[in-house]
Image (tube, rainbow, N blue to C red; front, side, top):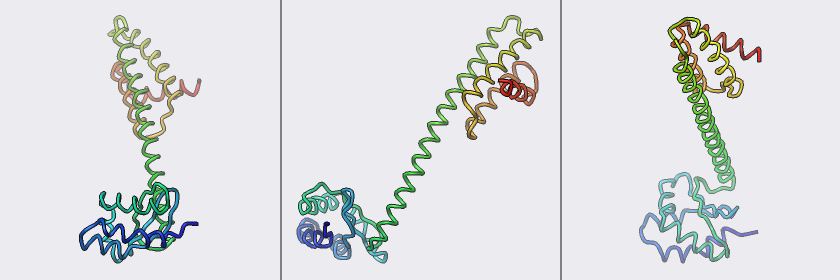
Length: 202
């Protein structure tokens, strides 16, 4: 098992030779090596000295630390500077990382779902427009009724394939209902009822 404290102690003189500035030196002096894990060399800065952590994250300083520590570990190293100097602080940081990843994955999944829903309902919306434009003598009530029945089937089929699972899809779906309502001069609530009836009938 790697003795990170020993590695850090050995690397510090070489690191200090390559940097200038009181802030960087002070940051190096108060830092504590915590762990080497999954390619990360974890260095902690005491909570009371958090303003010094930025000195270690500067690209030039970070590269120098990674180089000098990497030589001694004979491995490629990524420096991770965290708040706190205990192993428990690193565990807390990892939990935060996991939560950030989870939220990012959720956001990506939500965005993809919105794109898929938007694309699907946009397509339905355009189909309704084309279908109405292609309806002969659409000013006549019987032809508007025929369009209405076909439009209900179209939206009901789309609803069965693309369930309304979020607020964005809800608005896209409502937009299609409003489009039918506008074309047929029927209340949008009635249109929604007919779509649901058709959906339940399969």
